[in-house]
Amino acid sequence: MTEQLRREVCALHAELPRNGLVTWTAGNLSARVPGEELMVIKASGVRYDDLTPDSIVVCDLSGELVEGSLRPSSDAATHAYIYREMPEVGGIAHTHSAYATAWAIRGEPVPCVMTSIADEFGGEIPVGPFALIGDEEIGRGVVETLTGHRSPAVLMRAHGVFTIGPGPLEAIKAAVMCEDAARTVHLARALGDAVPLHQEDVDALYDRYHNVYGQR
Ligand SMILES: [Zn+2]
Image (cartoon, rainbow, N blue to C red; front, side, top):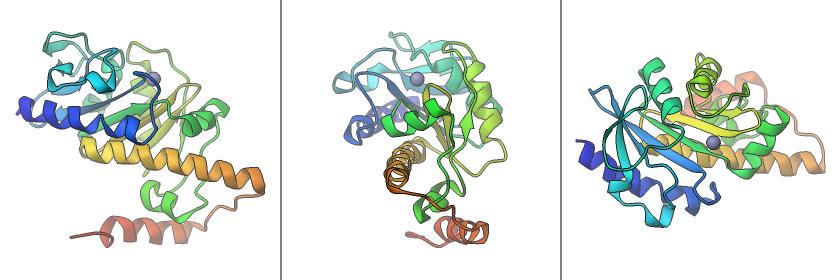
């Protein structure tokens, strides 16, 4: 089971550079090992071109290495905390993608001003608190901000984006959509006002996207 998950998470990491979400090695993706108190996560400081399934390590849900020969990502404790506190989460992505992080630096949520934001995020993309890297403080900020919120993405103040999903594919998709929303709203704002959608329209769009759109 962990073998297959390591291969899947390794392959999905290619989406980070492909979608312009990362500089050098600053981004990572993890997945919960179903039915176990374990997760798989990228090893620290490995370049995306050099990633193999062996560069994806198995950790327990306090972020300690269980299987693999490399040190886990410095964000392992954050991912582990989120899996512990949010049992519905099966995948987590983290990036410092430029436009979304620019909003995080200003501490301003991306407002829900276009249909694709209503679809994916069900409202604005919220801002979480500033926290130092390394222990569980970032995880606490992510969980506090996203609990009871429709958004699968949070802009962590002066840092970057964390996204959650039922699996790693949904988490990385949310990271791609978050950067797209941040970029497009930034462009709109540069040219004039961006008017928030009405709540009933946001609700209708979110419902359609999650219950009707796509292949059933
Ligand atoms: Zn980071």
